[in-house]
Length: 476
Ligand SMILES: [Zn+2]
Image (cartoon, rainbow, N blue to C red; front, top):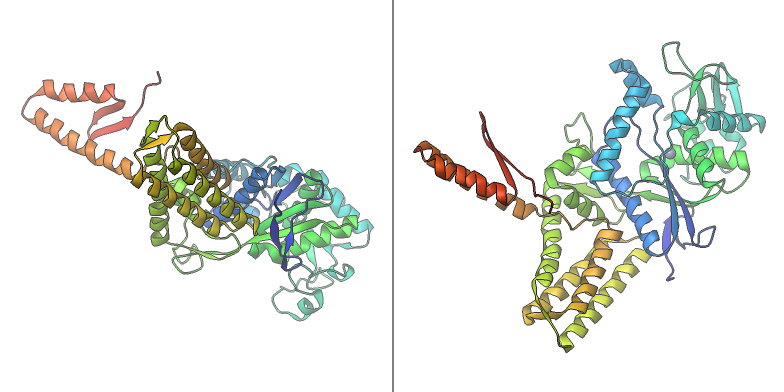
């Protein structure tokens, strides 16, 4: 196995990736807060870690991928108050939507999707351990983590507790001993969703959910913890304080963080009106194009979401798919030729380049460049050959698909946006001609068109709003 290097936020350098248990890897990624549908920035993080997971699997690791669902926290409780629907209803609605969205984006389903509300016992036990160890204190029904008791606080983000004491960025809360202390458990108002605890009725803080859940499924120490760079502080810093404080062991070996996603050059924000959900993006540009676009930039770089970028991604993806289709269209030859051998050698070289790029902290940007070169080699071959050996063709197609589909997760099958548009235009033309036939009373021709379209799989229906159609290929 060629060595893989990953950038570890904790040590601020690239390190050789050596999992704790030979060829097994445990990954925890902070999942969605289910108070709203996921936006394209969330989707970027999920796609980035899905590619990381896929590449580890491609390299032969057995991966356990855990992505939690935050179904109780400040945001969900606020939304419950605003809308009047129950916390459970709110959670179910947006959890279902999240699963639909990630399926459309061709994310492999996490092995475990633990919901915070189903792990109250684990969360309460962890808080109790922290109280017993003197790292947390009870204050008027709340429980706070005492950051002054954890010497290494700040090691991930570089924000030292001492510096925070003087900082004005943290709101003053008289229940806290120290401004940088954070809530593990919050006393609730009588109308808020709550759970029974040794400290009275309340609900957990967001940070403790991730510590309790990740350790339950991956153990007290595990390999990779991922999330957006905006989660480094305070969320991940606090997870370290909680987990390492409770166990006395290293919590996570490699901390990986993905960069920002801006939209049309600015920060994504609902109030600025430049906010786009993952669902809207997929509907507008097709899932494969969105996925290819997100995959084409290294996960640690910031990237801009723009129409122009998406259109470019579509053209690039189409070029790649066209090369493969043209290769599939060549006649099959029975004789061996020098051209076949050199094509295979080139393809093999590009596969190596792809792997080298991915081994260097999952550099998908360079990996995609290797795929373009692979496409160019195929095109060169097509320009000078009319035939190809069956074995060569199968091997080239297999390699291209394993990199594009298995690793980057961009499904080739079913992606035909240009031809889709062409079909739409053609159907409109046919409908116009059929309407013209009906207008002159030629029902026979109109029915004939309908019957023949049905035969090739197009079902048409005349409605008050015009003729509608759908493609419904009959299974043979
Ligand atoms: Zn988290």
